[in-house]
Length: 79
Image 1: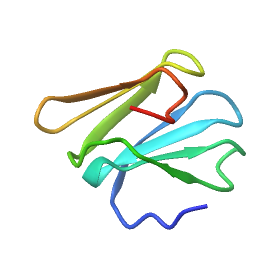
Image 2: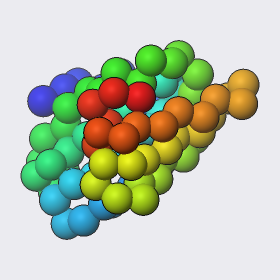
Image 3: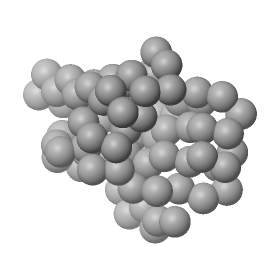
């Protein structure tokens, strides 16, 4: 569980259980229980992230300020 202190901008639902949120300061949060609890993921960036999308349970992208584009191939554990 986490306490987000950054503004959150975009939400992506992979399925009814798994969802992701991105926002200011490189914030990425993941829920695996339909949004009841959220875990902070380390995006490795400090840019504001405006959009997050997943092509599958493992492969996803987030984009943001300063031409930032980050990719995960492990469901968001590493970017």
